[in-house]
Image (tube, rainbow, N blue to C red):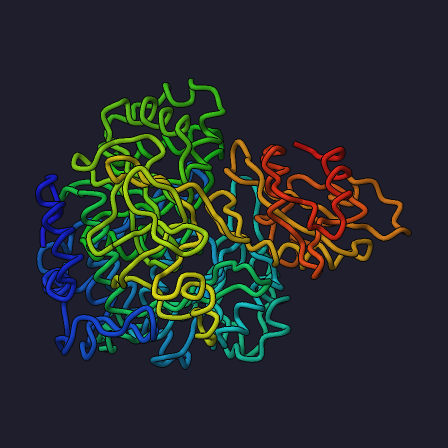
Length: 632
């Protein structure tokens, strides 16, 4: 099925996917390599949560990403690696070369005891071995679970133990701007508490001095050259687990979202094709880390399934200066650039000369991902990076959805700053009020739900299907609740307004407030805490922590915040650090003892006149104290 290129095509495809989903997705799936065709395209529903796509079929993800293209694209560039230091040479892989490296890696995994169904955990920087490694897992039917290289040893151990990973793959260290992150040392600390790990593969990157434990640890480079570059792809069932990816939840324990093979493959490939509209010689760059879902779906799988050229960037946007993104675009003649609003806002704050010194004339399309993009950032991106000639695709989706759900289709959908605009074919959104009643008509506002299943949806929370049900399907039975609020304009275009649950979107990464509060409460001086999000100029949302300190505590707020952030860094990682901290003698609570975070949220958003009825609080007098000490 070709990409949508007109309003009429969009309307026809959208209607068919909504009315005849079985027929629509069967047509989309015909382009892939199947070892066995499906018996039924889709079964199950949101009530029983027994969803299956392409039931009875057998396929292989790496075969569809690589082997399928070798007849006509063997010599085409598949991957461009841009290293952290611009003085270092970029590295490129053709589709044939990438295929061969994936096969060698897959054979190495097999020789180290990894079998179909085993879980392999990756804790790495952004080098080609990470992308090659996850594809190698898919080639032999192993399940990959990537943990972002900025997480702490405790967070890594918790994720390894939850998925019972058999092997950990890490770097000796990773480069991040002018810093080196000692990944192997962090991994060693984590592995003290991980009995399931039998082997630890270490990929050399920084030359850091590391300890190799006898019989468990081994160097990748010592063993990989002996492996054959031929590895027969292992056929797996359509619902065979592809990967587990952890995301923060409203409880302290992160959720391991389980994605399966065929539905995810079909959905990511199809949405990539429609949203990015790649030409055969175009160069695509998604700046996300593979530790997040965007790096899975739209750096790795989506582009490679479509035979595109994808750029992988090891560095950060401000090293060695704030023009690095624009240098990479010019160096590799990038035509399609997909990044986060946080990065756009941070670069917008820098001197415009950093942009004007670069050509950026190769660009054809810009994308935004991870959080709603504000209008000012959208306009800056459009004017200064796209030179007012590149359409912007402001994409809304989640780890749970697997792929893009609501997004403009370039040169088809309207361009409305800060609006994600139109749902993709197969996505049927609805807005509901607080009582669960659908809000009909336009314009409208409410909580965003989805009415019918789509192929890319996560099938479960790994090891805890009941949590999956409770988190996404208990609030509005029969529908998937996204946790986001949205507005719909008079023409039916959607604008995502942000989280409505106890999850905060920081720089495009979801952080559960419960997980942060749990870390804060580990500090010996803290009795109780509550964390809410507040509007942050660069990050979109920042973390504002209210905490009750013990009477014996003599620490200033500033010193307490510093020590608390050290605890958070150790337990979760620096991404979850508190931006604003306020000591208080109490927190607003109901008579049953529940903290009224709604009141705290209104305070930090400066909606003082909208606090609602606080007379029902157990301690309404605390509100005045909190307002007097407020930091924003």
